[in-house]
Image (cartoon, rainbow, N blue to C red; front, side):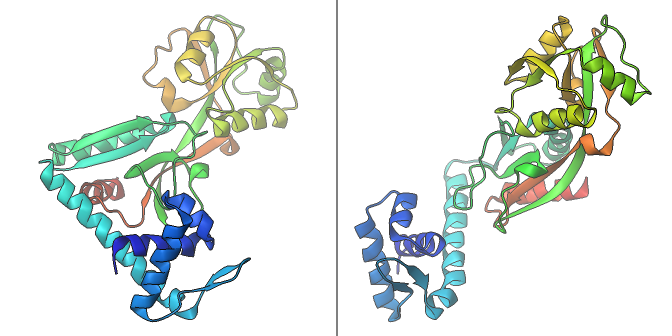
Length: 295
């Protein structure tokens, strides 16, 4: 029994398709068939019922599945530990983060670095329009993302970090928006030009902006969209239009030219989370998780 056989068994168990398993592993279908056949011979059982149209796990296959998963996980953990020692690292942490979670993550990393200063941290900025979470390939130790981005899978765990509050921002020289009368504010917004984060870059934020407009019964005049927050803020600063942005992204921004109106309604908040693979292969990740659970 070897790891390639285990990998083939797990891939076929997931896809219930030999062609799909071969595509997933990047090998010929004949290789998958041979490895499954050899594994069945070594175990002296059938692991799959196979017809031209259907593939299903046998009772023996279902019993073997969790053990195969344990074997694969142990191999991944061992490989990671050996690699760290070989490269002389005290540890390395890889994190993906959306803009709205940057402030929370910054505080958590400050605590982590004070306690474990020799562990390297790699950060990757992602957008809520990206799909980077996968059952079989987890390129990051942690994802700091919107709750709605979380893959619906038992392979991942998460904890809620904070609620992101949306704000309506505009040039301070423009006509003031009534802060206590939402109906009046919404009516004045109907004539405004909107500059938003694009739906492709941040579909969740874009959807919240559209929900606000629909709730207050007006269709926004969207004159431009951008994939990055800095371009939106630059445009609003210049008086080219108004926008909806997460409040936390404005904390480290020069807001002297901006008028910021927080949307107090609960329906315009976004739940943010920290997510990780249940197996948590990286020892440094386990240390970081301890920090997160204490915050």
